[in-house]
Structure formats: C-alpha cells, structure tokens
Amino acid sequence: QVQLVESGGGLVQAGGSLRLSCAASGSIFSINAMGWYRQAPGKQRELVARISSGGNTMYVDSVKGRFTISRDNPQNTVYLQMNDLKPEDTAVYYCNCNADLYGGSRYNYWGQGTQVTVSS
Image 1 (spheres, helix red, strand yellow):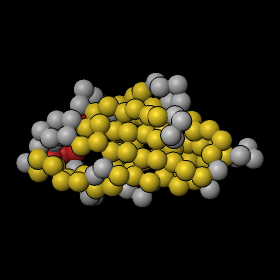
Image 2 (cartoon, helix red, strand yellow; image 1 turned 120 degrees about the vertical axis):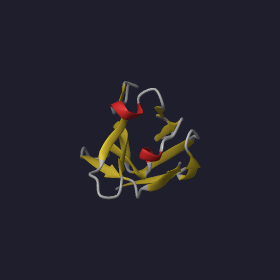
Image 3 (cartoon, helix red, strand yellow; image 1 turned 60 degrees about the vertical axis):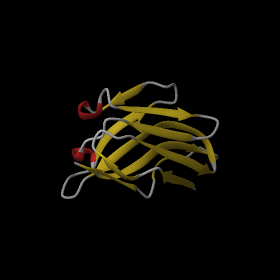
Image 4 (cartoon, one colour; image 1 turned 120 degrees about the horizontal axis):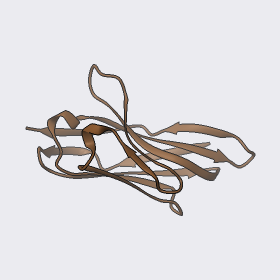
C-alpha cells in the first residue's frame, strides 16, 4: 500500500505564490509519473501538471509560465511551485502517482487533497 501526504495549500492574494508538496511512502519499488490535479466547485477534476520519472514535464495551458512541477526521486516527493496565482486557480489540488510495488503490481494513488484559495 502507498500513502500520499500533501501539504502547502492555503489562502493567498492574487499575484501571490504557494508551493505544494506531496510525499509518497509505503511498499514502493519505484514511482513512474507523478502529477497534480485540481477540482474547483462544480467542475470536473483536471490535470494541472505531470512529471515523468525522467523529469519530462507537461502543463495545462492555463498554468504554463506560472506553475513549475518538480520531483525528488530519492524522497519520493513531488512539488508544485505556483506563482502569479489567479482567482481561477482556486480549487482542491490532488497529488497523483503511478507506482510499482514490491511484488510487481502497479497502481495509481491519490492524495487527500489540499485547498488552494486565491482572493482577488
């Protein structure tokens, strides 16, 4: 089993910055892609950013140039640096990872979510 623990959400004014962290622990052999999703009230969950085990990144268009995803492989941790935040970034942010477990299984795991609120 794998647990994802997120931190770093909060309330910030427009134009401000936040850094989200997500640490994975458990019976992990290796972690493949890691990513951040978000879900605003009344909207579907959307992929915000994703990073492969080799460091290749992708971003949804609305955050390009403002958000940066990174990871620390030895610590099984993924980060999301969010700059120039806008009210439309307000959402619950979820960490996701695709992990290979000891024994050969591969699963997707989700964090509990952390609230990001951007005031205008």
